[in-house]
Length: 394
Image (cartoon, rainbow, N blue to C red):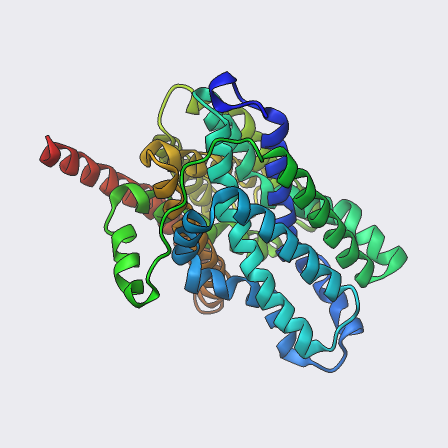
């Protein structure tokens, strides 16, 4: 194993990123075939919505605690065990379980998802050093977009040919194979000693410890505004784009975000801080939404919005190790990001549907613009707070 002091082992970085693809697929494998699930589970009605949301419920409740437990269990061990758990759950789902048991497996899958998304970026930050760290975490930030694209391109044809259980079986095989590879490949990676297990009776104080810290809180605070807007915008914006352009624009937006994150975002991270890049992304997104207010559904404004989202994506993850020096505090910050991300996903779509219903298109785009601007402002407020803390420590 190539250690950090000898340079960045990009093979292992990409393998950990692949584990992230598996974690994202825990959402995506249901999202891309959601309209086909009634054929697998007829007659369940509105309860079908739980097949998606149950994975995120645990993230909202236990996101911060997950970061603390990952530090106690160990980063390598958590990642491998989470992949093994994810493989086992997907394998069970491939057996076409009764609906009630299927929902239980989705909740258990939330534990696997949390373990991967908290441990993986911390391990990538350990593996990469110097400017490579920002690049590695920018790559990590693309895991949701890439996973959904791969599921659309390859998962849907597989379902059409072999059925939904085949998709679950392939996902199980992927997670299991990655668990074996990473168990072997990360065995010599120097990692810090495991922390002590948190006392769950002190859960409120554990949260306060993180949310009072302008260093641990900042990435999660921005991530809340980003996740609140990203998926929701992709959900409610399409009807306002010309039908002849709709499929092309909506298909291109996630790809533009990924490309901008890996190119312009990675380049900016070499010369400035992740927080400043996140703020730039939020401001670009705000301008794009005002553009869409003036010119509803205009394709170029949609691409600019996607570019702004791309800057926020990569720089948010890169800001975690920039603001937090130790793997333990990075794990706590990643746990807070997991919690904020699940909260944003849960809040965004219902909020925007309500705004759209009662206020129309204009209210929708102005609300998104306000939220994106608020993301930049909150980051600035936390940056000023860090400066005051630093002056007080001198």
